Image (cartoon, rainbow, N blue to C red):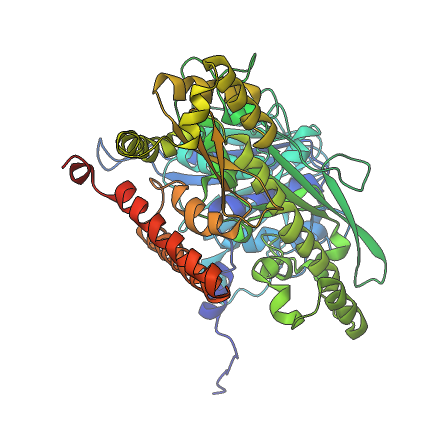
Length: 619
């Protein structure tokens, strides 16, 4: 008897096929939709069918069948049989959304133990049918069963709108690895991803019909997938009201492509030709984050005091964080490696990288079209570490001379990291800088400072702002404050008027602001306005980002680990500030050093009063 020594056993082969790397059931379903769109379909239907049996009244109905039907051009027998071979698909070209033709069998086996395919070119009653069954593969099946004439089952005739002269039906049964139990849960979790992956195609007219079914009868909730655009430039879309019918973002940046907000790069592919890569950017409109925009107030049911991130549209945006990678009008991935996970402002910008299939190898597109691994790996790339002291221009020239294949992508990454994202974040911070919710962060410290100010006013000689106040009318004081807020610190007139009204109502004589001043070396600046001691923190100084912003950012949604990291960052920044002052004293000649020491001691005495607990102040 001759023994067989197969390198790979059938069981191991099946296990490998099941673990083919699909992120979710929704991603696997997307492969089936790809096939329909690639076949020229303008209608693709997704059916999720529950069984009628439940082991108890409280138990949910379980999904038993998932099917995708399209009205594409269908397949003949040879093409149908080839479509179920692993690694031997029919779409080896690089023109459409297809990749290597492995999507149908790989995605199917990753979710189910049996996949059946009907395809027809002369009506569904003349369909050809074949299948793959894991039990048969484990038993040693080596060939895809030869397709046979078999009409599309009657139940699909009752449910489908896509059955026409040509088309294909893919049916999954024995669903051992589907993530969600019920039909609606499966569709709800799939709908957002499908709307995002195919947003451009849906906008251009492709319909993706979503149908929940139980016992072969449709349930309530049938709908077409709507575009889910992480750049929020598409309307209509799945974004909650009022941004379902109008864009929630606007294009950002001038761009060099002739289109606002779009930067164009030319990248050499493995075919030796240069191909365009478009970097598209967007940023939230004021009305998405502020309830006080005239004519665009928030819906009545949404409180104007609600944090913008807690609005229905803000929560929607939180699920679309990252840079969207688009290939042939289809999204591969929403890459979160470029975001600061603890910063809620990140949800309010969008960036899209659009490249053609000819650059698949350059970007590192995976067979299952779920990632561009080479590009995504550069999200953590720090060119300065590798440049060893060179400027970016010098480093770029060095890479060019060395023939480094990453050069084109590194140039794109440099643009995104060094120019685009920083500018987006700066604009978003400034967008709400003067709002009531943003100003609330300073109220407690201003109130305590005001308490100390009033006590010192009784105990010391009049300050400069006290003297100036005696020389000006109330109107003159407010006018000077208004001009400072608008002209110096770039607050909007509306915000400036509201800030002045609040300080007047609270009888405040000290105020803490944030300001942009990239040309100033100072961490903070002091203005002596009649009756108002105004302190502005320079947001362009490193001490602000490391000490103030890192703690002022959203605390409620941050994890314990994130909070601990932010506290360490702030503590280190504060210590470095003290060390920088020490070095300042160290560099002074003898007399200025003595004056600096005296200033440090005087400031320390006043700081003791400002930082002392309230009960100590009252003693």
